[in-house]
Length: 245
Ligand code: DC
Image (cartoon, rainbow, N blue to C red):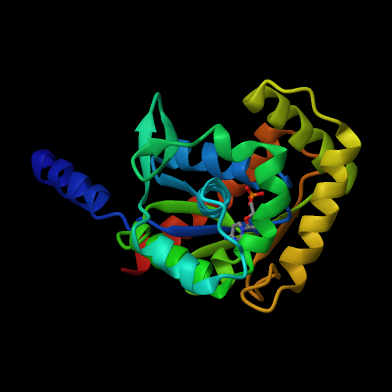
C-alpha cells in the first residue's frame, strides 16, 4: 500500500504543470537577474529575449546593413539562426553558431538596438523563435513584450521597475564587467533614458504594462528578497494549477 502511495506521489510530481512566466520591464530594471535566478531555482529554461534583439543588431551592424533597407534585412534574417546553449549553468546566446554573449553587451550595440527592435520584420522573426522556445512550458522569459505579445496567455506576468539612477549604476557595472572597457556612467544613463523612450513609444509591441501583470519595484529590495517574493507567488500558482488539473 505504501508503495502504491509512493508511486502515485511520484506520478503526480512528474505531471506537475510547468508554467510560462513572463517578466517585462525597463532596461536594467534587474529583470534579467531575477528571471535567471528564478529559472535556476525552479529548474526552468531561462530566455533573455533582449539578447536576441541585440544579436540581430550585431549582425546588421557587422554587415553594414542600413536599418531602413527592409528587403535586405528580410534576406539576412532568412539565413540567421539564434540558439541558446547551456554552458556552466548559464544560457549562452549563439548567432549563426557563433557565441556572441559578450559582444552584444557593448554600448555600441546598446545605442542601436532600440532602432532595430522597432522594425516589425525583426520582431516577427524573433517572436516566432520565442514562442517555439516556450512551447512545452517550464520557461522564464524576460523582455519588453513577453506578457503582452509573445505570451499573452502566460501563467504569470511580472513587470519590474526601478529608479533610473539605480538602473544606470547596475547597467554600468554589468557593462564594465562584461566588456572590460572603462565606460562613462552618464553615457549609460542617457542611453537608458533614450531606449526607454523608444521602447515605450514605438508603434509595434511597445513596452507597456499588461493588465494582469504583477508590478514589482526593486529599489528597496535585495536580489534575495526579489527572488523569494516572486518564487512564493510562482509556487502558489503552481499549486493552484496542479490541484485543479
Ligand atoms: O533587455 P535589454 O536591454 O538587453 O534589451 C535590449 C533592447 O531590445 C531593448 O532596448 C529593447 C529591445 N527588446 C524588445 O524590444 N523586446 C523584447 N522582448 C526584449 C528587448
